[in-house]
Image (cartoon, helix red, strand yellow):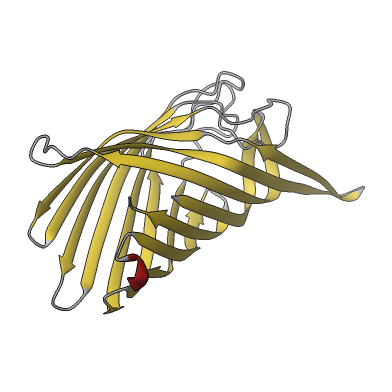
Length: 260
């Protein structure tokens, strides 16, 4: 599978390299190549899948600007490009109960990406994170309506280079899809994000700095009839509607997958 993620946004303040930074804008592009394998024998009554995703292209840029009363506006730009942090999926269990489907998955963010503590921006986090997700889907075949909610809890570890630990995060993704044809659907997607505890460590110079955000946007799904449902193309766009202590902007995603 191929997944391209794009982001552009801005924030009034943030912590970079353990220092408070005010007035910044950022953009990022990540190209992931992913693979997974589903085991045929049933385990715990469901299907077991394992996989991983590698960000073969990762680029991020940032502009920081600030005003002074004597010397006007100063700005600084920085860009980083390289291999990003890998996503490991040691297990994902799938269960089906008629029109209802359940997924329990564990993701691990491995600090394999480029990181330089002296750089203004990096494509890598430089710390491990563990994201546990539970997906619930209802698909009504008669009307072609699909509803999905995917809550998750991400546990972050400390960045040893800055002694900064981002607070643990709760996130909830949701989507409503309507199939207009057996191979084509349009949808409305959204997310809600909230830190459940504050940032910590000597690098957390702005205190707990707990973040929250909410976004909505459209989505399109196409499964070409000629490929008999083995391939899927997904196009998504998300706009941040509300935001606290996080970059506020727009997210784009283009995903192409093929099932062997």
